[in-house]
Length: 635
Image (tube, rainbow, N blue to C red; front, side, top):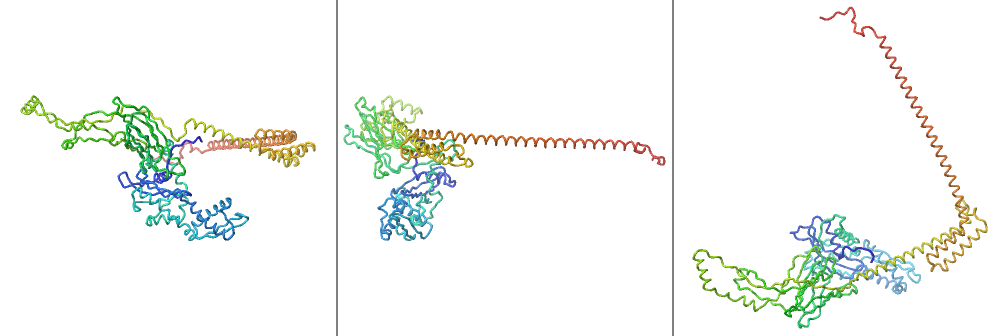
């Protein structure tokens, strides 16, 4: 209805355990002893204790216990009762008689409790709490712990229950992790420590965000966008679920109820219900112990009608099997129904059983419902191990238990001849005829649960859309009202202000000024008299009326502003053009200087070349290879 896609339903302590375990790298292996951790979550109004076992990539919830009426508000109530009595005697007022005074006192008490968590004493004061009286007080931590003593005696009961359900002792718990806002109370931490014999408590998780963090990890595991380490979660059933049905007229001694999913069973799980019927029947699912449910929750889960049931050709019972599934989210549904028939088949008799003459009949009461278990891990069914619900024919079993008929003389001679010729065969393996149930067809099931139908969901979604539109209309109407009020105040002030202050005084005559002020006054009176019931369209119309009255003045003001803006724009363009011309002139002068420097450089190079040529012409003759006369050649 809200447009939110729910990916997973998960228990709070399970989410906490998931956030704790998925980041741990030093967990035991599959064949090692698991790490047992108890999570103690003490919040404002609820107290939960859960024992979980961790292995690499695996989380298994062992047990969960809780106290739904224990939390931080109980401690606040104890402190408030203390100061109520003190202030009643000191100031002659009863804060509980005034709801507003009680709320303000509760806020002050909660603040005092937090201060005492880190300090030995703290004051409390509330100004004008009621009857124009200021109240104050002082509380020490020792006094606070004395007030909490009756409550601290209750804090160990969920711990004891969780250990009892898991069949463990305090020394079997490896770590104790505390979360929740109230877990910061020193006296409460000490009580939990004493219960575990002085074991050091752990606070590695964020006390306020542990559950939300675990839920985020759970969604990340399901999301294809994020890559998360594989981590399986196996939860337990917290509330036992039973099925009830009407007694069959053909089976007078039949039971009419059966607890299918017991408290502490693994979840998800699937179980097979077997019924013997001759006609269609109904069964209902409900929580077996309504007193365990939170608040005033309806224990009824749903009604399931099995169709297509009829007697066989021999007017015998049809064996009906129903598949009841409690999925990963804790939602129950009867997914499938089918019927089976018994057929005789031969199967070999085990040697040891044959020696003991074992073909034992296992009669069961016809028509009584039975349950077979199917455990699931990560939402997949494993093979079912069904309880024996098959009916066997005792007379036929007795006949099979008798001695086999003797061989004919011809058969005996053949055997003897083969034995004499050394061709004897080993004795044939003994077989027996047994009845097995073979699936023959499906049974249609119609369900009616407490869940909303698609039609009702669509109706509610449409109503939600209408309410969203109404909320948007109210917000838009309020926005238009504020816009009209702002326009009234702004226009009325501007008609008296000079142009330098963005006013309209220079652009309106006295008649126009009076008309504008009169219009503003009338609209203001209308807002305070009839504005609360006005619509969005009415506010828009009134705003247009005001703008039409002040329009000519505002237009002259805007024309003046546009004229000044145009003047400034032209001045800016002229300044920019002058700047560009100056830059071009400077650039041209620099280019001329560069060219002159290059010309001077070339002239200097030419002069140097000419001078070198003249020096070559004036060089002595020996430079051309002639030797002096007084130099003799070496032989």
